[in-house]
Length: 188
Length: 252
Image (cartoon, rainbow over all chains, first blue to last red; front, side, top):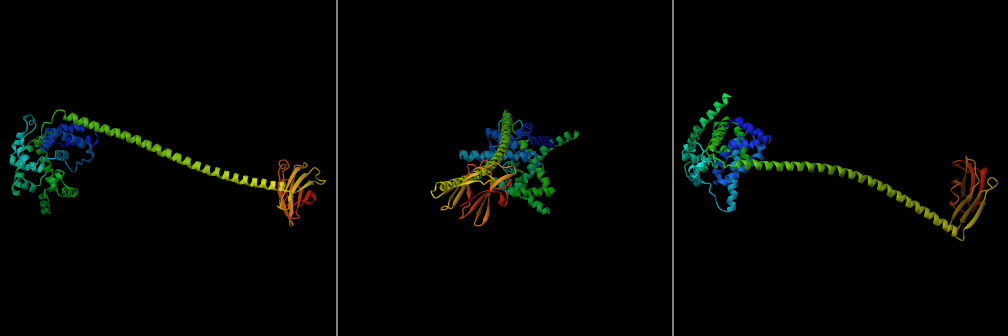
């Protein structure tokens, strides 16, 4: 992501200008909604999560430290934690388990989503699902490699190599668009 | 050193930190490694880019209206805050006013306390004074009303023919009084003064102010065979009687 835009948004956030929220939503709204949906598996709940996350982002704007994390990392942490909390509260309310374990990872891929929700989704299907599973475990479930190995019943060595390949594939995909952004930026 | 970094990277702590899953202690450790070792720093930057890229792949078109709802919620939040700020300002102003008025009333209270103390002392003085006077009056009454009281009429000698006075002497109660009824006019620089010779000692009983002393009973020190004198003295009184100016004497 363009760091210039990040800087601008962070400045607006710290000036408590609500234009920051507009900009954040325009640039990260769909992604964060996707993240929330990935965790809670429910459209309505995901909307609530995104809404609560944005309120938190607005309230905690002062606590963002650009030297410690990229803006997106910070947004992701808030959204993911809000989603996990939401799931927990729903679980305790309904007194039944909503599984966010391996079975979900297997069952709920891209194919489970409505086509109209997929228009912003790029490239995901270009990564083989066996790599996606490991990437999901790392980025969405917050598992260590050992935990992923235990959960998925895959040897640790295999997890490591799949992660390596998965990340390489990922880099191949976004590497091109990053290069494009760099070219565009340098022309200004 | 390389080994240390490799071991650290193998722990997955950096990944946990990326997602905000580390404890405070772990966070500090990770941040120290990021600050100290470029390899760790690079790995972290790469992880962040990977996370962003991977998350973006999961982007979903958010429903229409969600943005508007969020902005509304944030405006409401801010209004609440502003309301709170306004309330806070009002509260601090009233706190300051309260403090000021408390100080003002405290001062006023202190002043009233002081005034109250002064008034109380005055009342006590007056009471004491009144008791003294009442005591005097009672003693006078005892003397005047007592059958053993002798009433002695005193007249002035040729130096003050118009001098008239009454002395009341009670040897039993050992009290005596004198009432000067009239005194001849004296030049401005002279005055009448009373004395008593008690047990061979001459006592100064003070200057007689002719105007207001007519109804006053003056106590005389009592002693057996005492003698009182009225003399003419320079204005303001004298320290010893001028014998040639004796205008009256009373022996009792």
